[in-house]
Amino acid sequence: MSTTWVPMESNPDVMTKFLHKLGVTKDWSIVDVYGLEPDLLALVPKPVCAVILLYPLSKKGTPVVEDEEQGDKDKDATCSDPAVFHMKQYIHNACGTIALIHSVANSLETIKLQDGFLKTFLDKAQDLSHEGRGKLLVESEDISTTHKDVAQEGQTEVPGEEVVIIHHFVALVHKNGVLYELDGRKSGPISHGPTSPETLLEDAARVCKEFISRDPEEVCFTVLALANSDASSL
Image (cartoon, rainbow, N blue to C red; front, top):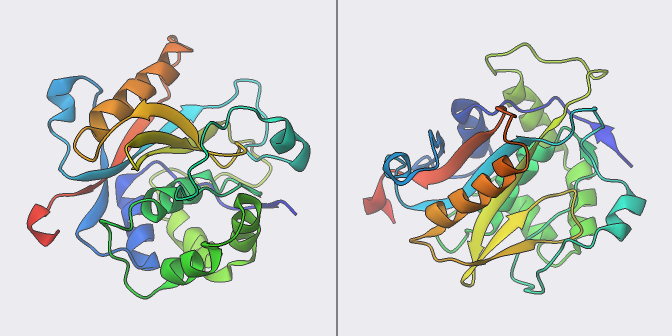
């Protein structure tokens, strides 16, 4: 079932444009998180609905997509809350789009979607399993075409399909008082303990530090946030 997309650059402008094309209102945008210490976190606009982490998945180089067998063996999932929207990744290089979908889909109490490709997708996906949602994305030509168009607009040269991408996006979101890590390669959401809308950014920063501590010599980590700088619009 797997297919391959052009990888999305960890570029706030590109990712924001993608969300707006899908129907997210323009008061919401992706912004850089320049550091994980309190003084730098304080610079991030509020409110924040999700934090997105890009990290090196493998130094040896393996395709960033999960297969059926790997998913069945994955024991990391620790969430039983059906309200958490999670989808499986079947598409190589789609982790950026999936992280953005996870971020928005779990924040619909705050983010009001306009009629568009994403609202249509989420309406269809709501009652599906995480596998069914992943298969629906494979079939969603509107989202695929939008991803391809926007991914071409990054600052770096678009790699060919034969190039193995070793970096991976995951989303960190708040749902019903819990901080969840959402990764299309995992069989379900992973709980990282309690959080709240007000403390999501700081709690997600703690999780990001845990990722970084696994490989302290690695420098290729990027942290982004889905934020609304116009609090009066909420």
